[in-house]
Length: 125
Ligand SMILES: [Zn+2]
Image (tube, rainbow, N blue to C red; front, side):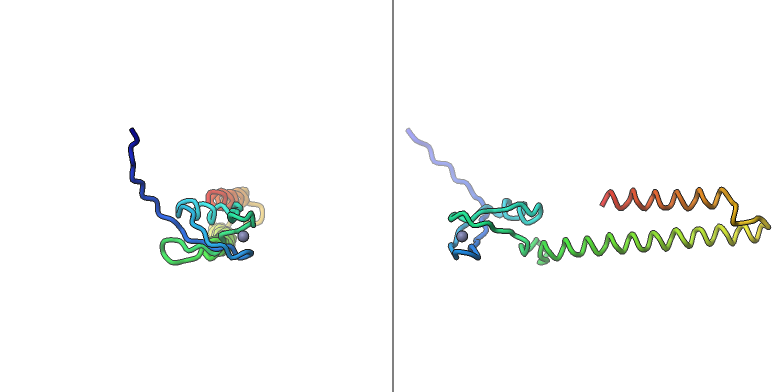
């Protein structure tokens, strides 16, 4: 006696850019390969990459990757600017208080802390 089970799987229709064969793969699998950039093979063994796969909000995976890279660069730039502004603020505060800003250990420590914080936050992205 056999039993039948219905299984619903969303499939992604693909075609090989080398041989043109059309085939289907599970949508979840296609999205995962697009994200991790691992190679997928067509039924005839040609290597395929899903760099232009579209994510849920209509953006391509390649576009999202580029956007993330740009955002990281912006964060690094802004963190460096913040570090300079904090150092300048510290220097100004010390001038107002009549201290010599060039030899201030507090200024050097604060600058170092900002750089470490920036490195940590970029690493978490
Ligand atoms: Zn092929």
